[in-house]
Length: 331
Image: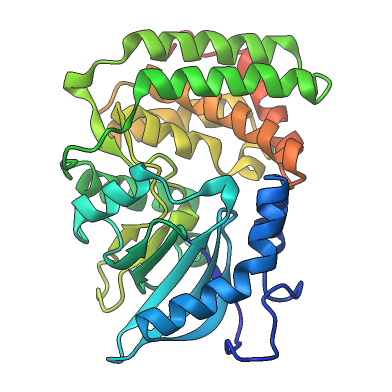
């Protein structure tokens, strides 16, 4: 979800619209939503104050690490520790996120204490630090996320209309093609052609009978430590997209991560090794994992370039190598 930024109290005379209070990545994403995002930023202090009054909250530290919402630590009137999340217009609280969290009831996901759909606000159980901050090597992080996903995939959606794997593949394909042209073609046509071809294969392969309720963005910042778990660390997921899709999609997200490690060596060989590791841990075929990973790497890189976030060109550098030397024994 996010990582602590600095201690603060929500009090009169202290505006959350100060640059120190709204994480820069959240501000950039909100501004990319145009006038709606600007209005959200201008009214955020009032929104949080209203929610704090209605839900009996004392608001503490602003948290950073995410891009989709203002997030802060809060304390309930009964002393419970929680987290308040208010999503910006570019990432409004979706039916998929809400239905996933409510269906899970704390199984594999953070438990929901309260929600307000009109204001895209959630009150969630407070968990520990994100997996990304625990100093674990990438392979250990991957294993921890796969274990958490196995629990989360067992959640049954309660009659919600969720985005399907076919729809997700189509939307990513459209975004990649359109954004690549809007940005003046920042990578080779080979990368784009490969991503679009993979997306079409995943669209055609969608089978609702083998689909699960997937998180949709299960990276190390969205896996938070469960406090008091002892030496056997357990994690819960936050910020789900909530998709009805094959397991390989969630695993493909992890193919998108740890770009510096991939660039430090043979990006293709390291990518293949990671893909095979994911396949073995989750019991899922490697081919779909590789394809979703390539699609996600390409789309996320273009999004970073579009909204001004760091890392986009490095992600594309790996995609260029993967497109030129796609492992035939996997795809």
